Length: 523
Image (cartoon, rainbow, N blue to C red; front, side, top):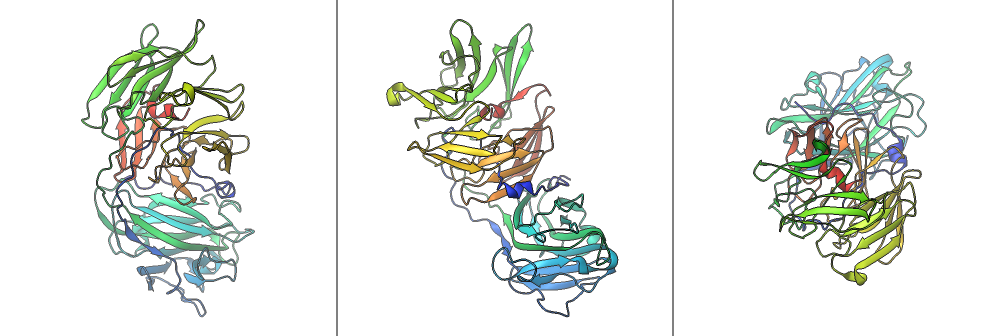
């Protein structure tokens, strides 16, 4: 069973930089998805937890807690057990994330030198793939005794037996360091996938600290606040204008590969597996040494096959095959070293021919609509920056964006010529901008060794989703046609996709040395 993505070590740098996962978009996005209200619950712990002593220890078999969202369960399996179980806390040690109260667990869960093992279990839930759990947590401002907390899942109905919570969805500070648990309120989100169908069970926050207690070298104080279980509801299918990487026009990103050395001596090829009918298509297109590109150059809502190629005679050739007419086009634009950035810069639903020149940070754009006399030349960025086309304001036109790894700054050129800077990321992150929240605005986002960090444009909050591992190639796309781009990675010929409405799926398609085409949107 694949649920969550196993143990993920949280780094406080994620919170310090306000980091989130970006988008590699820039094409005109889908039309808005019809409004559908998710089910689930929220819990802010404003009532129902003990605030004054003597506190219950919640010794086995534990105790029920009547909270606003339903009947939770507290269990203290610490050995030896201490004088306190799960309790409500206000601002004595640190303030709540919101409201007046949060749920707390601390070193007093154990006695003497103790193995602390305390559980705050949710109400009984009928889980399905795609459900997500979001919560806020923190430890003390200056930690000297490391804390650890695990988010666990039980699929055994109403059971409150700790052994049934055997699936680790997330582990915060697994290695027990003094800097591994966030010392400010930080939000985490975990999506459930890999279930065989709807399953009854509970999730639990497990304060799990060996060598803890009043005489231990570990365990101090953690808070949990504003827990939200979101269970997506199937919505009527939207009618997207264009989905990146959709080669058959069904509004879903297709698993598509480019193989630079498909045929001897120097011919390349594209291979795609259509999501609409499962059919396979392959086409010899391009030469070894070309760079694969993608875009909808003819506004038929289908991605066209294409490559860029530098020739000494005339500079950079863009060669693409229009899917509506099956006609190859050969515009010449740019110099050696220029980078093609796929985007609709003038809002006519067609990908425009453009080049970004790293040596001086200039964008050279041929507007397919003929706007601005047909050509646009704008300097935005410098050598060492990473350029992206992102529709950051939802107007159907790609904004010029660069990410500067040296500072972690994303700089967006707005329609009025001004710039907006957002600090979000580390120099080693892989930018992955896309519209992850379905508001038709691309989100700033990064992929960090298996952790997706997205700054949602809908509310400005950072969302942390563990999916993948170090060395994976991130390939975000809308794999379920719900107008939200999904976290996905390519690993050695296998596509791993965490779809926002249908959960996890894996598809074996391609060879380890192939280039997955969604990567063409995030050069």
